[in-house]
Image (cartoon, rainbow, N blue to C red; front, side, top):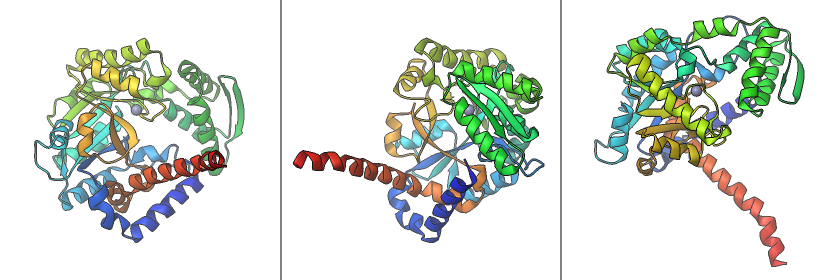
Length: 363
Ligand SMILES: [Zn+2]
């Protein structure tokens, strides 16, 4: 996300917060609860350029969020309890589910002590290839490439690029441009392109994976605590909708099998990698159902409503964006107002884009 866009969103969210609209509208928009999504939990890294800052929150902020939820009398529950409450068969108190994607080691070393001290249940969705070191969080690799190099060149599919990356501003722009190219080319080409770029720019992707990701002993350590739910997140962390059906199914099925084999975990919960409309749709929801997962989460934005009990394999989540580490943003997001506005804007765009057709037909 570029700085201007972030600034624009911050300005809009702050204006919304100051207007207190979220407090007035919350009874209509806040739903019954929400699933929050985190990735890295760690202190700010050295240097002015922070790659992918939206994926990082500090342990202190995580602790502050938990204390804030408790102060607001919002329960922190696991996925099963969330589903019971959505189905209306349990307490009507508001609730939040805390989820952490991918299987980062800092979830154990930095987040776990905070969560444990607060007795807060949480879910870690593990992509097993990341633990087996057969896959890599390629966005972290690209982040490191951009951090350590003043110029980045490479190729993704048919697109060749040669980008300046000396200043913080150039680095941010280069990272955004490269990630855009890598998320539009073929998934296998994406991984080849990242490997080529890492080799050409002096980044040891394997060492980075070793330092960033949990190993199996650590997954087992987490799984042994009843506070922790381990969910599946595929093997290779590919955008499933960009794979053929058989491969998408294997990605889902084999990650669950590997979790059982390597950590003794019978994973009943699943998270679609990337989770956006482009990365997971009805075909993937049907696969998750066929494979018998109890719940599956997307990154489609929203709070949880009673109706979500009917589609437990396409649950919305709220990303806790590291660029927005202030409790007022948490309150705003949990109010559901930004998502209601977003849906309203989409409908409005639908109406205005349909207008020329409507007027043409009346001529
Ligand atoms: Zn992920």
